[in-house]
Length: 198
Image (cartoon, rainbow, N blue to C red; front, side, top):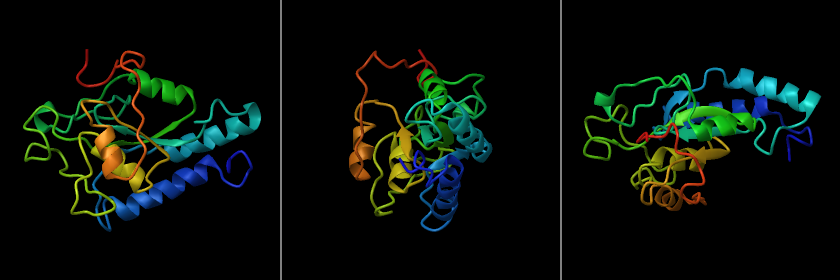
């Protein structure tokens, strides 16, 4: 509504989120939720602001920053699955959900942390960056495998966060980070480009 009213731009919104990430993720309390930042996010936001002016908005997500869990492919950014031996393969194309978000005009601001997916689970010595912390209390758990998404939204690193439903991994981080989480009906949202890949 603020963007539609001209009181805010997508570029300014992205800039504000980037400042919060800089202040609270790697510094300050070191939430440790962000794996990879989109270095082109400000340029994408400027282009989407211009598109909004000339053509109108594509959808309510037009120019809105989104963070995406590390199990979901974003073209050009590594998918590590929280497991060092997996490496950091860079997918050539977006997962289906990522492609739909981008088509709606959303800005993928960052890939965010998940637990060690193929090892012993959690944040052991095989995890690339270690544990995500709960923004409300760093001594408390941020939840299950979508912990990076939950912590990122609780810390105001983006407007929307995408996780995956792997046996409570969306609901628990939402609950532990004082958020509302929504789970799609199974089989109605494509899992193409999500780990484990099928």
